[in-house]
Structures are given as structure tokens and as C-alpha cells.
Image 1 (cartoon, rainbow, N blue to C red):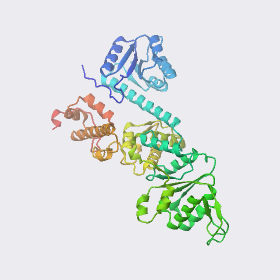
Image 2: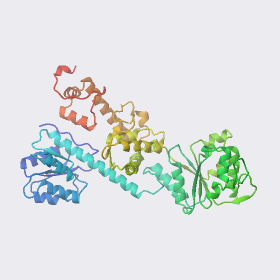
Image 3: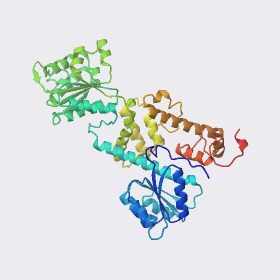
Image 4: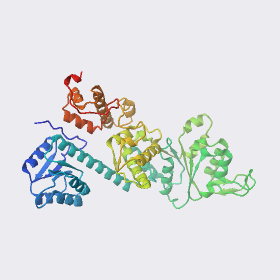
Length: 493
């Protein structure tokens, strides 16, 4: 009897075998399917009676159900309807000896994942179909888990993270939000520094007062001072009326100074006084104005280096750096990427009118291993692009920009690229990359012929075909389409 590969551990956890419900009034088919799936590592519950099968369909514990469509009294469609009404998360595979377009359409409309025609041409088709059903269920379960995390997340103004580094940031924000002390938020561009500032504001007693933000690097020295402190009529050319500054506009609330490392020395002096005394002077005026403002500053520059170069005042640095919050780059928290991807899928799916609920495993692998020099902002842009290009409810590797695809080589997914990941995760990704590359290479050696490549790899042809489907290999490493016509053994030299 042919060897049947076990279902992968990613689908079947070590601590528990995946459970499959099989309902068929043909005892021969029932026994054969049960034996095939048990040898593949499944726990199988085989039921011949339709009424009993209908009752078992609503019981918890089944991940996949295989149902015969044509049955006396209680049909497979009846059981399918019962499963989808009470256990919609269960994936259902229909079996029929009378396959027609109408039955297939009816099964899919009823919620079935797939259907098989009896008698089975190849037992591998049974295992592969059930395996894919398990993978789909695992993917949907993961999506539901991510949705739950997003629903109950801490509402840190769009800051998202389940890993230890971001959880530490959230705890720090919670701990200092009710203080009026100045905060210095540090991190690379795109890590969410303004989001952290907004979270501090909206979790503070100042939440009902203004939150005012300014990018200090976007303004000239004169304009920056005017924006921050205001000016009086005639203070400079073009100052035709008195104008309030952002300190006054933020009175009682929070002023967020982004790119604080770029402000010129003269403005640094005026800012230091405002922080020390809680008062400001408009440009061109000698009158002081009292303000009650909490200042949150942010930078992606090394302020220590700027101080050493006399480009940033040391006293201002210590006045700003009462509380420091460091936002980690995305490459240091890859465990947060699936959650962020799901968040952006929902966000841009709503904007485009699409309902993307799933991410192809190879696409998620590419997203997880990317270095993300632009951090979360870059990830958001990539997902937005993918949503626009995606067809159906699945985000595929082909929807990602060039360089993100599933065909990356082992050299591209190398040690340096994976060094930021935990060992077990890095090993798994590197192994997948090697196996995909090996399959493509051996196919190229055999001119894309699957039968010849299977012999060269020392793998049974049906198992080799399953590997190609598992790793989504559709062309050899030279980009040639695959063929499956028999060749002489001599063709593989």
C-alpha cells in the first residue's frame, strides 16, 4: 500500500491530533477514508448513519468534516447546513459519486471548502484536500485571534503590539500619562512617535484639552519661533496682526514637538525658558504670558552626539528628557507583524470596499522576514498597495512589491536577514526557503519535468507533487513552466 505522509505539525499540533468527522453510508469508502486519514496522523470519527452524523455535526472538537452528498433520509447537504449553522469554523469537504457542476456549486454556496469525486483516483488527493482544509481553518482561526487582539487592544491611538518590547512601552505610557512631566520619545522614522504622544495625551487628565503637533524641521527659524510663541503686529515683515502661538493654542493640553533635534540654537533658548518658567513671550513683545502646557518631544536623531557637537543644548536635553520612551524598530519585534498586517488589511479593505480576511502563508513569510527600514510606516504602505492589487479575499505574495515574493532564495533569506528573529522561527523560515529553492533547482535540472525531478530527488511522484503544491512552486528556477509527461530514466543524467 502506498505511503501516506503525515499532516504537517503546523496544522496538527503535537499535543493533539486533528479530528476529522467522516459520514458515508458506503462502508467500504468509510473504512478506506478512515484508514487513509489515520495513517496521515488524524483522529477519525467514522459514522454510517445519517441521523447520528447529523447529531455529531454539532459536537465540538472537529476541525474538518467529510460528508457524502447522496445519502438516504439525511443527505450530506443537510449535515453541511447543520455544521455551518452551529459550528461555522469547521471546514467541510463533500464527497460524491455523481459530480456535476450543479452539485459543486450547491456545496460551495452551502459553505463547503471543497469536494471530491468517488471513487478516488489517488489517495493522496484525499490527504492533500484534508490538509488544505486544516491549513485554511488554522489561517482563519489565526485571523479571528488577531481580530480579538485588535478588539481588546489597549487603544494606544493606533500603536499595536503584542510582543514584550511594545508591551513595555504601553506600560510606561500608562504609568506616566497622568503626570505633567515632559517626555522625550525616541525612535527611528516610522516607528509611531506621534502615536505614542497622542496616547500619552488621551490617557491623561488633559484629554479634553487641545493636542497640538508641530514638525520642527519643516519650518525656518523665524517661522518656527512665530509658530511656537506667536508674534505681535510689526514684529517682522508680513506680521500685520497679532497672532497666538502653539503654546497658547495648547494651553491646558499637550504640545508635541516632532524632530526636536532640528531646532536652531536661538529657538532652543526660548524653548528652555518656556519649559522652566511656564511662560512665553510673543516675537516682538516684552510681555510674558503664562501657559499650562505639557510638552512631549520626539526625535530620530542622536541628541547625545548633537550635544557633543554643540548643536543641542545640554540643559534643554535634560529638561526634555525627564521621562524617555524608546520605540523599538519593527525588525526587532517581528512577532507584531501579523497583528499589524491584519490591522492594515481591515483599515484599507474598508477604504477600498474589499473584504480581505486571509494572508497567503508565503506572503506572511515574506512580510515577517523583511528588514523594514521604514518601520511600521513602510509596512502600512506595502499592505495598502497589496490591498489595492489583491483579488478576492486572499492577500498573495504576488500582490507584494518586487523583492517580497515567495520565490526568494536561501541566500536572500540568510543568517543576517533572520538574525533579528527567535531561533525557532528563524530556523523554520530558513528551512522553508531552502526546500522551495531545492524544488525549483531540481526541476530546472530536469527541464521542468515533474516525473523526472521526483526520481532525481528520490521522492515518490505523488509526494513530490504535494511538495510543489505545499511550497507553491509553479515554475523552475529558470522561470520555465512545469510539465508532467513521463520521460525515460535516461533523461535524468
